[in-house]
Amino acid sequence: MPNPTFDLVVLGSGPGGYVAAIRAAQLGLKTAIVEREHLGGICLNWGCIPTKALLRSSEIFHLLHRLDEFGFSAADIKFDMTKIVARSRAVAERLSNGVKMLMKKHKIDVIWGEGKFTGKGQLTITHEGKSQVVEAKNIIIATGARARSLPGLEPDGELVWTYKEAMVPKALPKSLLVIGSGAIGIEFASFFRALGAEVTVVEILDRILPVEDAEISAFAEKQFKKQGMKILTGAKVDKIERGKNGITATITAKDGKSETQSFERAILAVGIAGNVENIGLEALGVKVEKGHIVIDAWGATNVPGLYAIGDVTGAPWLAHKAMHEGVLCVEKIAGVKGLHPMDVTKIPGCTYSSPQVASVGWTEAKAKEQGRKVKVGRFPFLGNGKAIALGEPDGFVKTVFDADTGELLGAHMIGAEVTELIHGYTVARTLETTEAELMETIFPHPTLSEMLHESVLDAYGRALHI
Image 1 (cartoon, rainbow, N blue to C red):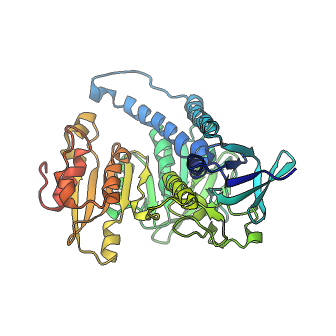
Image 2 (cartoon, rainbow, N blue to C red):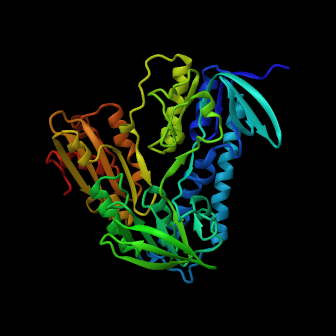
Image 3 (cartoon, rainbow, N blue to C red):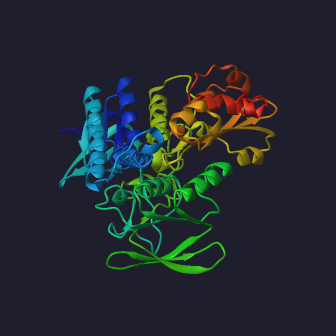
């Protein structure tokens, strides 16, 4: 019997993989997707979605302790970690089932198992001890990534966690060490601190959330410290000694002095590494650099007919970047005309801590490094009626424009629900909007979105409410 043959096979069903498969099916390509564990991948099952469910629980717990501000009262407020985790897992399961339904709707073959290249355009898929071979004109690698480890700080699943164990705690640790202050580390630090854990964040660079604008990082650090979080920047965890019920960490501070501190648990959040091993890339001669597959602007590798998208191709490690890459890659394969290659400066980034952080485009420092003369606008939440009414007065919006052309170079914000606001500036950058169009845009009142308008006005000395 001949091997099953497809126009396209996608290896991995994370956000990039399943979206690529759907777009391929829409374009009339006979498509299959290969998955070894969960439809929806890490993001849907163990990342973006379930973490947001956890953070929602911690937000509610925080609000319950502010009831008096809003005219309410309640006594003996408690939480049940088992129920918090169960809700998060139920949300993930519901969405995974949704992906299953989408595969069925679009008549995409789902092949369970681990795929490995055993020839050009050929994958051998192994599942429960049985193997089958599938062939395809085009194959997209969407195998994602996993948490990075560091020598001497390796996660053990009990005392030192990755994001996966941190998502299903059996109980709230009294004290927690978070190593790394990127989005993953800060989101978990925010979750556990809101529930009452003593949290210490150690960041080797000179500021937390180091990919964000420096003003945003500074404001975030101030807010987290007000919440009782301990933050050590320019510091390093040299080693961890594991005991029966906790760990002892040796931490070297910015001034070079080392000290030991004890914690019940630690979370290692120092980035991710692409899943490039054990899938047969070496045999095909696929170019891999620093643990990530090298691709062109359309997702093509150096091997004809072989493509890669998402986290396995490197930063930024974002689900929406993977989705866009998947669509773009498939449309290129299908010969769709008028496509625009990926522009990473148009990809928004979001951190769902409390306060939230969101950005798109260049930071002020990056714009200046590029030789741009800039105009910068800022508007505080404190000047916005909706923010005051919500009881969320902490935060600000910052916009960076090219002083000569009016091009919106970047936008950065911190505060309540900014992850739902950043798309306004993302659309503006996609449409190549200048300050003139943004100033003429009518924003509804009273909304948080008015701050987007005011920040633009402020860059040109025209802010109305500060």
